[in-house]
Amino acid sequence: MADPFCTRILVPVDFSSCSEEAFRIALTLAQTFQAELLVLHVMDTSALAAFNRLGLLAVP
Image 1 (tube, helix red, strand yellow):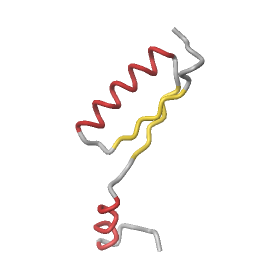
Image 2 (tube, helix red, strand yellow):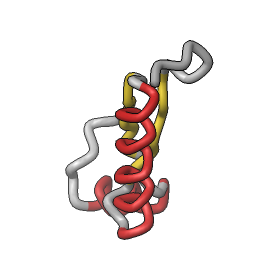
Image 3 (tube, one colour):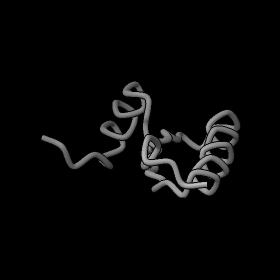
């Protein structure tokens, strides 16, 4: 059932159980509407400080 109104679906994920469920739902919708599924990995900005302290952040 192709619908030109729904051609792309964006789903943000952070690998939590909630985002895994959101991904599964988005995948089902994308298959149903023959839409492109775009996955965006998101991160809590407070985690960036921890990465920076460990020297894992390459941002000046």
